Amino acid sequence: MQRLRDLILTQKPLILERKIKLRWLVGLSSVPLFGIIAAFGFAPDSADKVPLQTVIEAIQLPNIPSQDGNIALWREEKIQRGDTIGTLLARLKVTDIEAVDFLRNPKNAHSLYQLTPGRLVQAKTDQNGKLLSLHYLNGKGDELVVARTENGLQSKEQTANLETRIQMKSASIDSSLFAATDSIGLPDSVATQIADMFASDIDFHRDLRKGDHFTVVYEMSYSNGEPVKTGRILAAEFINQGKSYRAVYFDAPGGESGYYTPEGKNLRKAFLRCPLPFSRITSGFTLARFHPFLQKWRAHKGVDFGAPIGTPVRATADGTVEFKGSQHGYGNLIVLQHQGKFSTAYGHLSRFAGGLHRGEKISQGEVIGYVGMTGWATGPHLHYEFRINDTAVDPMKAVLPGARPINPQYASAFRVETRALAERLNLMRSVDLANLD
Image (cartoon, rainbow, N blue to C red; front, side, top):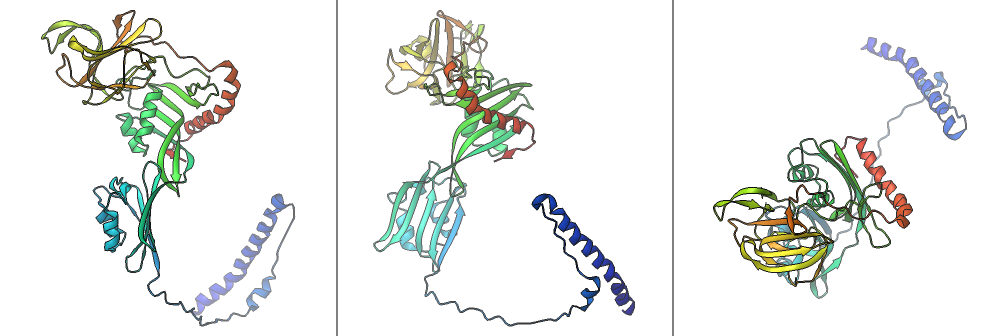
């Protein structure tokens, strides 16, 4: 023990010397920051003479007044798959029979009958489990507020105060676009927007390869820190088979809002490749195919997209309704006439969009009907034809006309407003992160 004490005592000068050097170093390091040299020194011999004393002091705790049952408790629970209002209230420690009956009435809490897994519910109760208030924010930006008043429980739905934030995410394709977006927590609505943006350049049915990469910059609305709903994509890059496709959103003053390349070329083609989102091709364009209904060989002058009955069918381009009705093997058929020599046909529909009539103007992407199996169809699918001067050509191989680029009078504003978006895409190229806010 004596040797240990002697060893410790011999180390004290060395320790003090290191401390002194460190304090001088800290003082000198402040020169570039403040422009003042400040040094603090301590006499080595005085350190051992500082008296040490242990003090134990009793601390008087304050008296907490009794609340007589008025203690308010806030709890928050995340909705789980399979939850009911009853199970949710139980986890929130609400044991108020009146509140349970009140919330089970759809007129009082309609939003709670559309419980979305992952969303949050906050409840305020007293110490006995009596419900004082409840808040639930649905995925549409509407907030249900239940509060106890002098007249009992009352509820109202109000528009939540939303804060918009810009999100940036990036991922590589392993099997499919949706699998990649799921792996980084990207909402399906964003994945659908990505597919729509690049649909004219990339066939998402057949062109995707393992290792393809995408980056997306998009808007997300929040309320009290909780994500509520997904907004518009502001910029995106998709690298498909080594080739990069980029898009930035520009809100043009002349009403030409949309997605453009960073150079100002309109990303939107005059025609979409596919009238259905993410469907599979069950039969392609060919001059010789064994018809499954007629049981004989004949030309198949369109492309069949397999999809469940009721899947919305979109117009692939702006146009006018030339025909709507039933026509032989096509079943329920819509034919749209487009600019100049182009027309498109949509067959085997289960039904037409409401109010559709001959001569009506249709916009690209507008729903005109729904997948069915009318006419000579052996299963639910859409038969789609792309015609040039009334002659059917393969829509998956045809050279599609482009849309107008940025109007020259808006070119300067376009460069200014989209420069930051392009820089965000460049930033994501230089980092290896899957999620960056």
